Amino acid sequence: MKRVRLFDTELLPAYLVFISLLLFSGRSIGEASTNPITLANFHKVAAIGLLLFLLAIYFLRKGLPRNWPKGLVFFGCFIVVSVISTFLYSPWVLFSLWKSMEILAVFGVALFVLHKSRSDGSIIERYYEAILLFFKFLLITVLAGLILFPDEAIQMPLSDKAFTGYQEGVIPYQLFGVIIQINPNSIGMIAAILLYICIVRIMSSDRKSRLKKIIEIMLLLTMLVFAQSRTAWIAFLLSGVFAMVIFASRKKKIIALIVIFSVGTVTYLNKATLYQYMTRGMSETRVMQMSGRINMWDVAIKRFDATDLENKIFGLGYMYANRMILATELGAEDRATLHSDYIDALISNGWSGLAALILSILYALRNILVGLIRPLQANPRFLELGGILIILVVRSITGTTFASHNHFLVLFLIIIVYVEFELQRTSRSSRIHLSR
Image 1 (cartoon, rainbow, N blue to C red):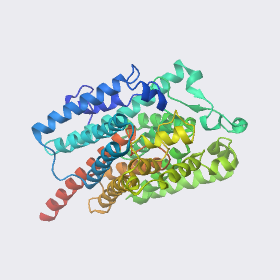
Image 2: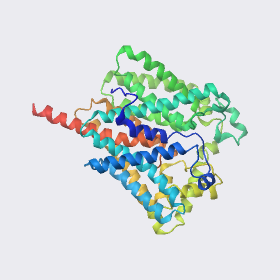
Image 3: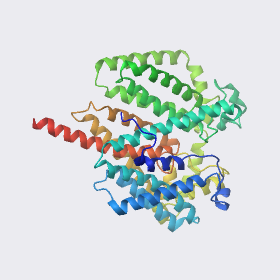
């Protein structure tokens, strides 16, 4: 693993992206329209503006990289559709254009890393490790908020505030980010990603570093439990199944099966408690509605179906349409997304944008599988990156992941570049091995 230096000038684009992702206060759609730039988001505007400026200078001098990974190509198409949808259909052109510039900035960083990797392959791993350090920093701020502002950091589940039955949950409170605003689902997902990485790396680490990893695992597991994110738990368990299936070592598979059998037995014996934990004491009807998401998606799709053919192709305005549906038809002005990348992409970017986004994800998954079935499949990076990608895909079904500017999009685009780099390196190693 490449150790990331705190002040690495080549990581400046990553630092600017991280700054842009720090959220200190949320705003309703009305507040965003009447006062777009405030002290609470000035750092974000400044970071994105400076990042786009620096990337423009770099690519004007060096030129764009050649031979993009197909995952990046299709995500670039998604951005193009976002801009088209912005100028053709968004009543708030500046708002939608800004949202397009946010994802363009993250995309530009991925292209920057791709370009630099042609001369220095270590840049990819350094960027990847920097993102993981940023995730750890976010969780540290959550813990700091818990210590300094416990009444705000520990709250009843938002989805259950309207229900008197929330007290019946095993843990009637959720963990929130206070110093930097992070919702419980994002906390759980970040913890799940870092937990998966810790477990994968501990299998190949030396004994001296294992104690530190075990302590880290216990801390991350605790945060995952108190975040009470059902999606994060499902994503983490699926990534564990993925890791078990592709473990080359028979011994490790046996150990994994023993662990799964033990966990399964404990789960069965405590299924009632587990059910109460996973549902947070909600009614069965509320659970089946995925905390209201299905109703929200149904309203959005009906609104989309009532539009013209052009809108169906290019959407109703990038990141404007979903917010207006939330505000006008669902009475949720404080929400920014429809809690599904695919519904958000469909409403904002139409069928063309949704197709581009799905193809980008599919090509990323396809490259992971190609790396795993090649002769030199011992490369542990494919195991690590594949598990993370599974976690991100599961999250994308019920939360913001790929379709807009957020923590997980940064990781996704770097994974696309990283996997492509590892495939090329593995291919070269295979040719050298066969020529001997």
